[in-house]
Length: 325
Image 1: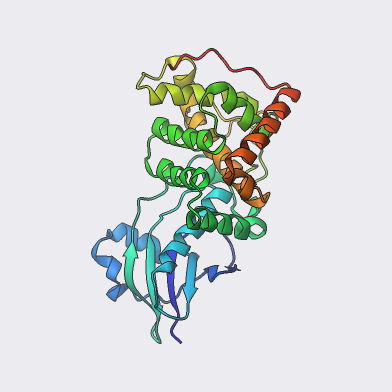
Image 2: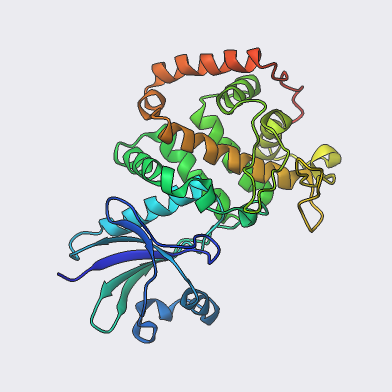
């Protein structure tokens, strides 16, 4: 039978080898691609085409027939799962191929907006963030969330995508904090801070170590209160105050090294912190087998009280006086 697949290109530093997962999902090389007669060449730039031609590995959803349109859904779910594990950004274009004797023939495509990367995303290795260990749990969690219309999980996943596409740090931060707010059923600052802090751990690092083993020293209690305040400022149409959000805020390692080359402000830290805390939370739900609890309002509300207690026992800071309302 003829293999049909939907594939999305990965950034060339994303992975170093092929992977075979379940449900027809894989990471592999595609060669040769018949670019001269591809359907996508009519509506992408020469630069985009050249970038795809240089792609080493593709994230693929495949099967041995062309029946149905589920391959695009599977590929999109797999792409979301990859960003939940390690939000590095991605071209986020999905090409449908049919394998022929001459190579891979592109017959149709979907092209959502590119997922913008961040400073930290560019310093991470997807493989070192547990790709092989956690991918299937996250992929099936996302698939189930959309199949069962579990809104408390669906919407934060969509907000990860939209926040990475928008290319605007304050609005991206707003979307990521909204995702956390939905997931933890907070609705106000105190509940947000205690539930997110208790779930992730107040003294836990916000960011993973880079591919070189350098650990950013930002911890959850350093940013969780400011995240909700910043969310309120943006959501209520107020100007971002100079202090503290537009003041310089370098990313410092646990060894005291400055990790950013260009100057950065606290708005940049809000963007990256909210993104990584949201993806870490969703990943923990799926890998930790918490789907059913999250999807049941009463069970999840009871569980959230435990996280609030855990936050208090860990000595988490109280909510700041709100300036954004």
